[in-house]
Length: 53
Image (cartoon, one colour):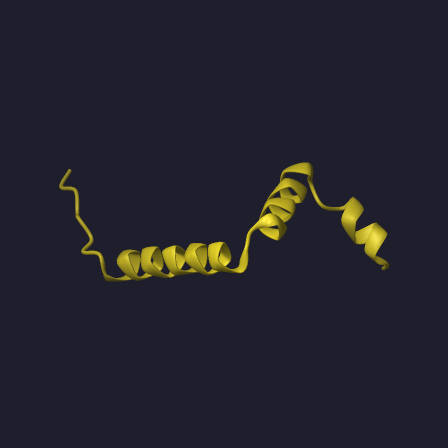
C-alpha cells in the first residue's frame, strides 16, 4: 500500500492533529511529552476513591 492510499484512510480530524504536531517546535513537542508523562504518573499513583452505594 503506497503513501497516498494510507493518507486517504486517515480521517480529517487526524490529519489536522498530524499537521498541528508537525508545526510544533522540538521544545514544544518535549513539553507536551513531559505533560503526558506527568499526567500518566499522577493517574497511576492516584488513590482510588470508592463510592458507597
